[in-house]
Length: 398
Image 1 (spheres, one colour):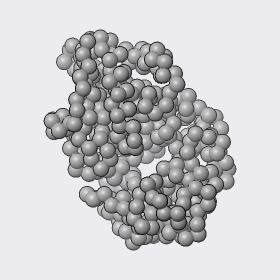
Image 2 (cartoon, rainbow, N blue to C red; image 1 turned 180 degrees about the horizontal axis):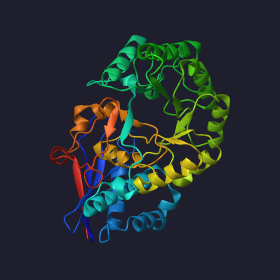
Image 3 (cartoon, rainbow, N blue to C red; image 1 turned 60 degrees about the vertical axis):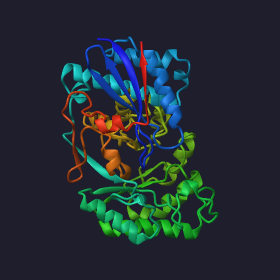
Image 4 (tube, rainbow, N blue to C red; image 1 turned 180 degrees about the vertical axis):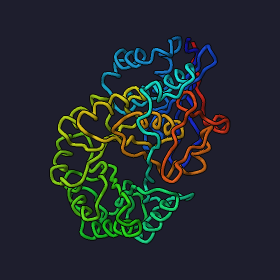
């Protein structure tokens, strides 16, 4: 089998940005799909560009030689050995598409090629409830609205949720874009801000009761000191785990937060890439939950290796998912195989109609649990609607 062309597809923008996918085509009529995990944030054109660059490298190659192609991109492109978000997002998309081809060629889901299931049902949580939970994308301020979002998720069958209680200012603006000096997320949090954050989270705890698992997300907004301050504030509310309490560029800063909050598990990973990136976090026992993003950290191949390495250190895995239907399906294939799987993320943007219509198949949890796709490959493709409405499709031929 030989790769004959690669399509790089910029999907129609939605609330989570513009999803970028690759479609790797072969001379046997089998195509595989992968996703570049740069639809959110400010790296869209870099994502399109790296997919085109790396797509050109694999035309003419045997798609069944997944490990060889991964190593080729990693070691011979010069920048591959430097790593980083954009490089690894490109590798991730290509790698996932190759696994999709291999599963289709052999007539089995990818999880069978990775060793088979250890988990039949994938527990999921409702993520980013500061934006509400439903058809509208909101910016919640009042604790009563946080309670309602919790009830909406519970009504959908979830028994776990995630919220960034500082991600929306008291004026209803996205915190990372706010200029309000009273909503300062680094240095020291004001007592008023802490009180607002606590009341929002407390409202969710009261609405969900003691059995609801609440994950706290901070998107790396705080620094080490404010990360500790916020963790101590919320500790009485029995937090399931605490995600990105500071940025992951200094491992020892995260370690200080762990030492200051010994009763709260720390999580991070969407901005950590490959085994090399996770190594020090695991060796120093900084993270109790790792969150590699399959569309950013090196694809299916590297995600599986990272998860296996984490298992040595008794770290649980919640693969980070903030993308389209291709990302979700590929993630499920890995999660059902690894023995240290914890829970799956369902972003509030992923339940929106526009995002769901990007996939040929509409996968959502039932009563808070996913069934893993049993179709050959990753079990998902872009829909005809997604292809027809794509902003751009770049085709790389021999």
